[in-house]
Length: 123
Image (cartoon, rainbow, N blue to C red):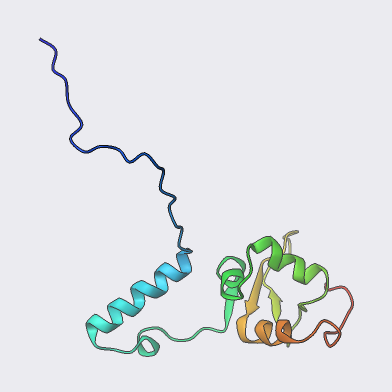
């Protein structure tokens, strides 16, 4: 005898759209909750970093993608150099760059009007 399973809960007639949370925001939220549970401040729980790789940096700067952040380097908006907003950590034999971004310097640079930013191509 064949057994049939009945669905006990009706399916809604509409589709719900999932909201996606960026991983960096999710991690920050978890850190805040854990810090609160342990009775420590978030600043004590996590030392503040200055330099970030491309993937966490673009969301921290309010950009939509890592590609958009890299475009800011190629068009000269963000500078690559020793005392600039971006540093290149690629190995000597690598062809592709490995950028890291100083968030505070990048935010400062991006807050300037385009006419105040120095022009020219980046390395």
